[in-house]
Length: 510
Image (cartoon, rainbow, N blue to C red; front, side):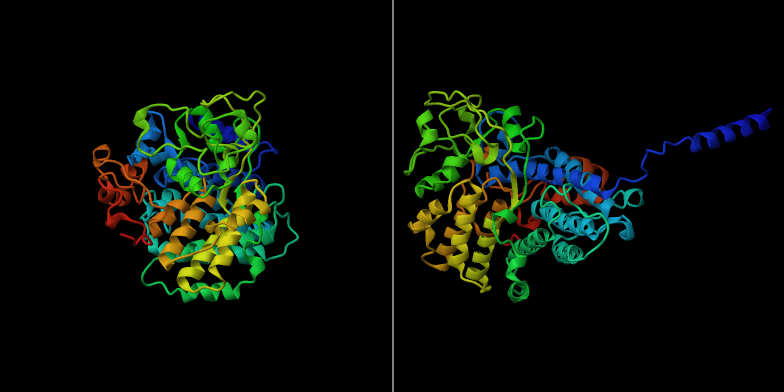
């Protein structure tokens, strides 16, 4: 009887093993994985990291007495970054990238490998720039290693540059296999634009590396001279950005955050005052006018007033409706049919379609990077030429015209003047405005250069950091609870996120 039962169980298992649907795929094809990767990447670049960096570099400010207020006071704890680290990066789009990179090259178009290598380099560059030492060489080993070491961040950057070179080489190949097209949300399978993005990302990484004392800046000149100009970004059409939809749940992440967490964030006084001082026309799409009136939407203020931000760290004053609010550049087309009379404006009174893109790396940034490399490191080109090109590209990104950019450049703001330090400050301040709501790079620029000048908060409001802006993020609670390699690193930064001993390797400024 026992033998009969065993034979019966075996035959039943065999029969169940054969009962498989012929419509069930054993492995997702790359054209189905790629959209998920790109959507997740764009979503993450418009979410938590954007708010951390945007608050600390004072492009936005916190207004409500909730979680965002703590970030505005430079208070952030390990549980705050669990999601972005795990769901967003390591178990999110980076893990999906590994799935494509493991595909059979004989059955997969090389463009899929190229795009994934370029996005992998970008993703890990963001992790390094926010955390410093991170798991890289032992990441994605699964059960073979569930406690990866954190690689020295200085050793990761060269590997990312190599990864970008490999991605570019893949994007130069030809194949008769199915190539990415509509499944590529960024460039619709356009290899030339992917190569331009990769080379421009290399320039960003080189700019960070140039901040380290042992880096040979001649490497940058060699790279630029060896790269045809058409293989860097050439126009705003090359912007690396993810466009969103007008459908609820598929809109710009910051727009969705404003709808779901009303009055948590608003315009910072730091960027509003900087732009006011130059009568900057980009204010008209970045912010709503304040005091508000319907007429000022149609004919925005042009002088040195008309836009009001909230000083960071002052959210204890309560909700204010006399401030400028984040506007069409981030929230999309204005869809309100009845404009409120003003002079105050609540978060409910204007409606937007939410279809504005998340800008990740832009042609404007490319030009400002080239300007700084020429100004500080003798790289090819004229700093002021690139500086002005960056301003023009930013105006176009903001929905303004080249003529408006030309008029702005004709003011003192369009000419680099003074000492090299003064010119650097002017350049970084313009880049700061052009990089409004770009994740990470304004924070990196401030750490590298000290510009723009940012305010701190009273030490009593943040005893751990002494009221000083953090230079890194804490490691996530979930990770160092399970991984002693990260626990040891977190112990060094648990009390002070600005300590010199825990900074990113290229952050050498006092």
